[in-house]
Length: 113
Image (cartoon, rainbow, N blue to C red; front, side):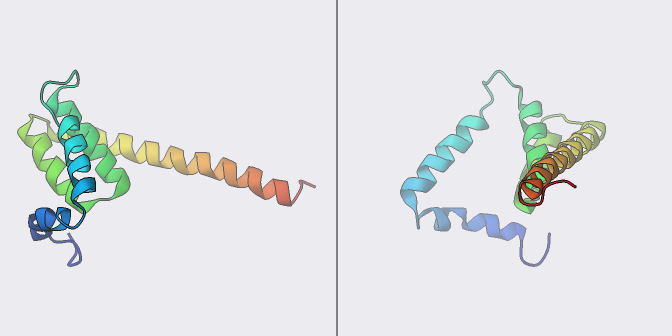
């Protein structure tokens, strides 16, 4: 993590949550519901999905939490690598999708010759 993002910052979550308690309570309840062990999706897959999203959003804190949680849930290095490659492909696909939209918007302003 960069100097801007430090693992110790996670210890300030409760202090931060106290600044917006209603929103924080709702967020944490939602987060806990998504991280439950009794869902249809097993814990390992929940962590790999979370890791893919963390890679895509580039959240260093989420990478820290979910890489460790995926390992504890039994994920392998190979599963982590495949998860990362899937996330990269989806992100690249999103770029291509937005490029198609950009081309359409551009052509609405500058018709094709």
